[in-house]
Length: 196
Length: 85
Image (tube, rainbow over all chains, first blue to last red; front, side, top):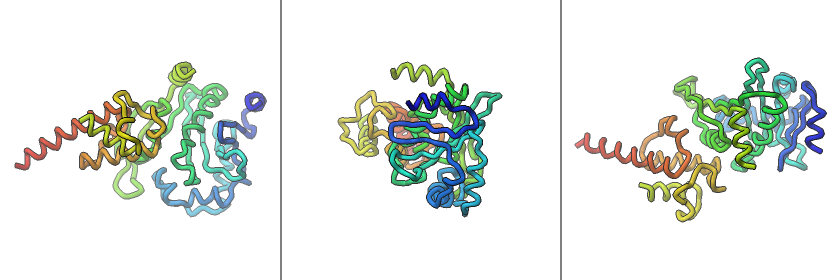
């Protein structure tokens, strides 16, 4: 059923996927709820992105969500099954020319930290990105020393392709490194076949 | 140094040291998750008394890697201590 729904999807349309515990669907301006906005204004959450709290209101949040077109860029809410509000979001920026997708996952609901949400959601999104969007590589960057994110990329078979030392101003002062992780489609397929 | 590595890992993952088997790799037990990994890196740094280099951080994928880091750090501590005397 869920694969049948995905077969009907075409670029530009609202996207909805399903993993074991979550529905992962395109956010719309109506999803700019207090919960969603609060993640952008939370210093602890933004710290892991090496960003300060944003001081966003509904207008900024709606403008941000509206930037994503479900064709080249995707901003997907992560909804626990049976819940009305998301616990985080998954963002994809694709480059159809280079066939490289850059992804990012943020878990805003702190009670879900340590619950392996990024692993489950990224695990569901990779087949979509490689097979449906026809990307050849998925990339992620970690700004600063985000050890849980490093674990998540390593655990999914991404390779650390480089560390850009002292690349940007650190949110705590000083300078922050950027870790670049990448996974090629062939590596993903090999890993998938080994697991099956 | 492997026994010390096992103790550090058991403490970080909140498991019995006997659960840290010789072939342990990242994510191969449920307790080696993202938060366990964070605790592990912090514990290694506390033991060595220094912040790990980013390249050392991304090289932590197994018990063997942790042992190697502790061995290298122990050697460095000895060298530094000797230099002070």
